[in-house]
Amino acid sequence: MIQAMLQYIWPKDDKSVRDRVKLAVSLLVGAKVLSVTVPFIFKYAVDYLNAGAALNMDTAPQTAATIATSLLLGYGIARASAAGFNELRNAVFAKVAQHSIRKIAKNVFLHLHNLDLAFHLQRQTGALSKTIDRGSRGINFVLSAMVFNVVPTIFELALVSSILGIKCGAAFAGISLGCVGIYAVYTLTVTQWRTKFRIYMNQAENEAGNKAIDSLINYETVKYFNNEKFEADRYDGVLKKYEDASLKTSSSLALLNFGQNAIFSAALSGIMILAANEIVKGNMTVGDLVMVNGLLFQLSIPLGFLGSVYREVRQALIDMQTMFTLMTMDSAVKSNSNAPYLHVDAKSSTIKFENVSFEYGPGKEILRNLNLTIKPGKKTAIVGGSGSGKSTLVRLLYRFYEPTRGRIYIGDQDIREVDIESLRKSISIVPQDSVLFHDTIKYNLHYGDLRASEEDIIQAAKMAEIHDSIVTWPNGYETQVGERGLKLSGGEKQRVAIARAILKNSPILIFDEATSSLDSITEYNILKALRNATHGRTSICIAHRLSTIMDADEIFVLENGKVSEQGSHFTLLQNPNSLYWKLWNTQNHSQERMQSRSL
Image 1 (cartoon, rainbow, N blue to C red):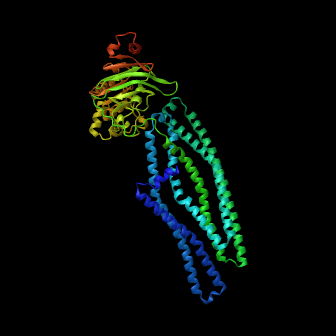
Image 2 (cartoon, helix red, strand yellow):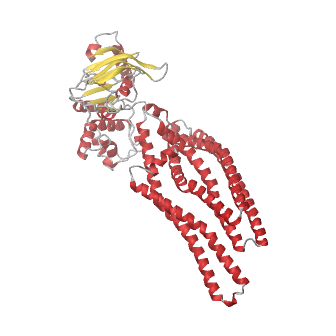
Image 3 (cartoon, rainbow, N blue to C red):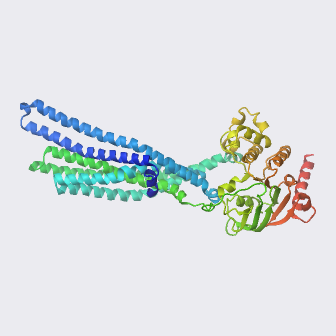
């Protein structure tokens, strides 16, 4: 993960980012140098005042005051400058960090969209959202820590220990190095132990977020069955897990902080006692005592960073681990390198399934050596019982999945060998379950073709028989449809999906139960509009209601993963033993019984 992030803070193709990093590091060096000079300036001021008092400063009071004031002013300026350099460094690096976060977040988002359907059918939206949110927050801290804390802290520890050893003796350097060593070992050991509590906390937070979002998305179902209290209790149970893990995290943090302070306080007391003994012996001055104290406190700053940075970096890396694991996942369905562009027109849109077999998992075979040919420019219908593989054919054609065996051709090109983006541009799909974005009706219609004009949008809406309804709404095309389009009826959502498919203007149109949520009159009008929209194009209609595909040029009947019958509507009805005849007869008798009951 660290190696991946270094590519963002030191990109080969962006000189301005590298220049900002160089400037930030220069400001860091300047701040460290100024910080180390502060105890020395204070030492000289104390020594001068102490020496002046011993020599009776009445001889030159103004001179002594001037020198002492200058030294103390220098002390203040050095402290302020060090702080100013640090803040300026943070301001300079902020753009690098935020730019990196933006690029990483965008790449993760794009990568998720590029993963195959199998991943998205298994994902948990709430947990995934939490993962990305925490990972993005952790990036900023880890980036800053790598550049400004880890290496500079080691440098400052070495510098302060060396100065103590040279100026004051090996015993002083030994205490400072011993303090650093014990402090580091204690911090790393306790932090490693605490890590598991953070992992439990993240898992509980993921679970809580997922349950909350899943319950809110299914708000109507909860209401239908009066299960509000049940949902609240489930949510509270997960929050209890989060509470327990959070308490353990907080308690172990208190233990870590107390131990760090105890180690540093013991080292500070020891080194101050050493300095006091040296002053009594006449080997050191009071100013040296102040300098040692200042340097050791200077040492406490990076030591504090060592503990907090390591702790926070560990936690941030845990938070980021799942997000970066997502980036390592590879889609099972993707274009080959240098794959040719798929060119499809009215004459070359023949679709062939040759010996296609497919299974969603071991022992769950859906298609078995299926063969069928869909002629260009014709309306083809695919019917069959539930689980016969009708919708699976669409998913394979759109390359949401790859066949277990066999090949699929459009024209003379194997769809596995062509550019996947060009393949999907060639196909418009109206799904059975039409889900809309939480935006305006215009936005959802425009999504079919982002380059389409407003006139094109209105024309597509008219063809889908929804324009007349939209103009009667108070906000017209600016009406908000709600999350997943819940403010619209099932029929309205389906007509929006049909309009989007018309607007996409692809040579191949697929309708997967496209009129299942419509009343008979609207269905008739839409079917009439779809005949105009599909004129000269290859269209595939998957249907349970056989009345919607009576005008199909050819109908394929699927049974047990294979084509059991094919022909026109009237041809298939000639055989009373055929599955199509049975389906047609069953539906008609069901409608007759319903009508007689209503009468």
